Amino acid sequence: ILKSLGDRKKEGQILIGFALETSDEIQNALQKLQNKNADMIVLNSLRDAHAGFGYDTNKVTVYDKSGNEFSLNLASKKEIAQQILNIVKTKLQ
Image (cartoon, rainbow, N blue to C red; front, side, top):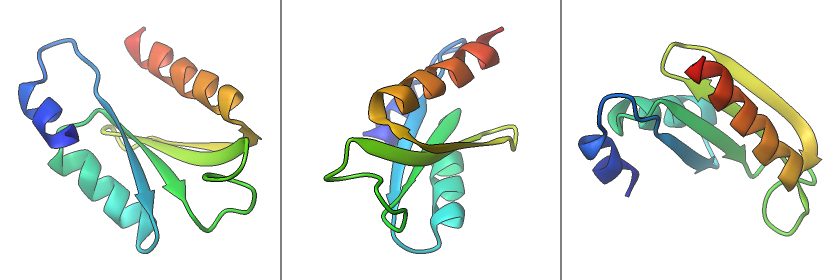
């Protein structure tokens, strides 16, 4: 789905993908960022305690195509979503 959206992305659109990885996490996420024509990728790891499936909390790392990395510490999923939106808003300015 992300690849299809990346292929159709228009000027001015921002495409954010999510990557749940179990091995070579950073490398695989960065490869998806590039291959799928996304502007940002949010890396979820199954290795982080109290994060992801079965929890109300999460811990993620956001990578953008400019090479920036944003590590979001363990927080409620609602707070993580707000932090991701804040990163996007910053990129739009």
